[in-house]
Amino acid sequence: MMQRFSDELLASLKGKRCLVTGAAGMVGRHVVELLSEIGADVTPTDMRSVVGSTMLVADLRYFDLCERMTEGMDCVFHVAGLKGSAKDTSEHASRYFVPMLQMDTNILEACHLNKVPQVVFTSSIGAYAVGATALMEFDAFNGQPMDIPGWAKRMGDLQISLYCKEYGYNWAVVRLAHIYGPWDKFTEDAMFIPSLLARLKRGDKQIELLGTGTSERDFLYAEDTAEGIIRALIKGTKGDVVNLGSGKGFSIRKVAGIVNSFIPFHYRFNGLGQSYSHRVLDIHRAKKRLGWKPRISLEDGLRRTWEWLKAQEGGG
Image 1 (cartoon, helix red, strand yellow):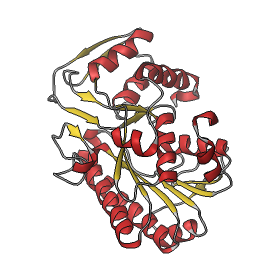
Image 2: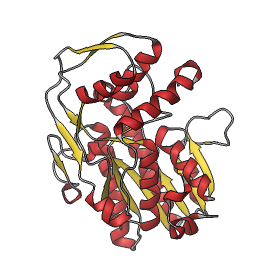
Image 3: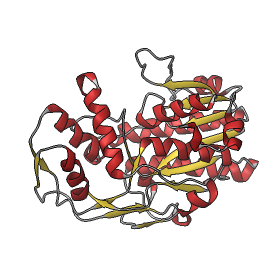
């Protein structure tokens, strides 16, 4: 994987002290993996431990702890967040919104007080306006966010932007598409891809899917996401939002068909509960500013994710 990074990028992070929050999650694990290959001095932290790892278990809702962790760091990758299905985040909104605000505010303020030179904050496609279809960065703070986690993420985006304007930091904000891949949350109440794969891993052969399958989403493989995040931290965005996605829209029906092309099962859409929507990130700024674009196709990424999940004891 190291050949993906230029010599300049490799040299800039080799030996640097890097804190990665949310390191037990899907994106965080990929960030830690790539940083380790580069030769960075990585401190992974999460609210939960991982068997066999050197994970620092820490609750980012406590400011004093955040301040201690960020002291002396050269780089902070703030990847931590709470992820859930649309149904769960709607029914239990405060369980997502409040902790996310606490974690983001604490870790970013701690980075400011400790004058951490390089910081990247991972935001979400949900921070864009509800009903928006052309998701472009100049429109980042207009309209009402798509969901409750999107509200929390937009507050983090704004916090970074204000720090950069007032103190001249070159900190980065990246808004992520719908990320999938190894180490995702593979449960039936998760997002569409991990939920579908979890049911298939369980052995389901007849699957009913919600809605019509016509809505289009922007899907990005976690490994590509990690590379984009690292590039954003190195180059900085001066508090501007930069999108990381495929830049392409795939219908839910199309995704199900791709999975069905290498896993035999029967499925149907029940036509209930969802209306058509189109959410695709414009990634021209990422290409121009970060020199980044996704390398792994949706077909290849889904196959890789399935092969990884099959190899996990107990289903991931």
